[in-house]
Amino acid sequence: MEILISNGQDLPVDEKFLEKIARYALSWEGVSSGELSIALVAEDEIQELNTKYRGKDYPTDVLSFQAETPGEEIEGMPYLLGDVVICPAVAARQATEYGQSFEQEMALLLTHGILHLLGYDHKDEEGAEVMEMHEQEILTGIFTTGENAQN
Image 1 (cartoon, helix red, strand yellow):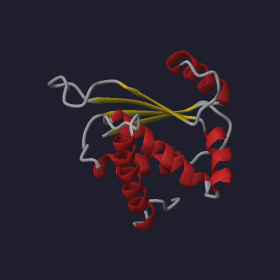
Image 2 (spheres, one colour):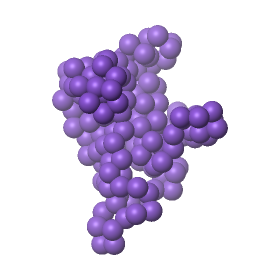
Image 3 (tube, one colour):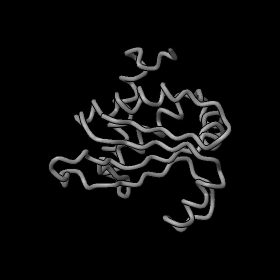
Image 4 (cartoon, one colour):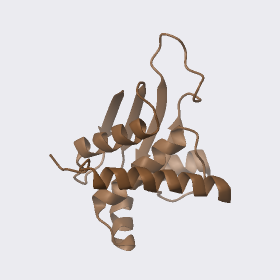
């Protein structure tokens, strides 16, 4: 699995930690090969993307852009999961608001974005319950197995 991380914002973020989170979440979901892009962006950039693609003119925490539909891979080509775009500034505010660490919030947002790329959604109550259950199982695994070690 190739994980590409681009960081175009100013807050310090442990990119190795994000890579561990992504690998754990993908492995938990049974994804062992392909390519995932993670972009860390400033509030103005995520607001622009949120306005353009969702019609919502405000900065959000995470956006996912699926490259290929699961199951529609092209033989001989790497499977392109897509892009998860996270705004660490929004994540930092939310972490304070929800009483958790910045790392916990970033792990949640990245996991949430990856699950969207894998076809999960929360548009209805049933889908939201399934997605939340997967998020909690993945995050519990990450934070209880030492995957969150900052080394």
